[in-house]
Image (cartoon, rainbow, N blue to C red; front, side, top):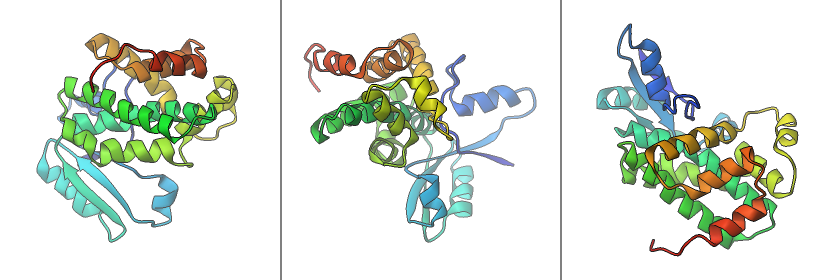
Length: 234
């Protein structure tokens, strides 16, 4: 069988990606044939058969191609990629950035602020992916900038909604209690924060979202802190 993973996240306790979790569970039995699906794809729009493009990533080009051929239709286009690490990191951390972008909107800030945040957010996602062995060009594709734009700016984004309500001054537990769906970025923020610290990767936006969610930092204080960081080159 081929394991086709459509989840996006990082295990909190171990900071393992989903491929690593599956390998850890099955390592005493066999090496799983693993493919991850990721990319800009709100489920409700896929169900409506709106045109959509995603990526199937695997270390094996044959496994990725099998999944590509199985799932592709005239309305659902699947590309292949062999950078599982880059695809999984992009698909995970974009949810954290969506919370940050939602907070920007909740504060009443404009497009300039949101564009700056998403662009610098992509830079820190790329740093983490490359540190783990991924490729920077993967984050310029569907699993990177594609999924990031969708989740940060799409009104259907659960994570953006959490950030928006935080920006308006509401408390996290109050927001979550009203949601029927999971905002994955809340837990991923903790896992990503701990992983970046362990690896020594600078991720100021991710760190700020973690502090906003778990240390009660206000979105306005986070805005000031990010804008007053030491100046540097891009």
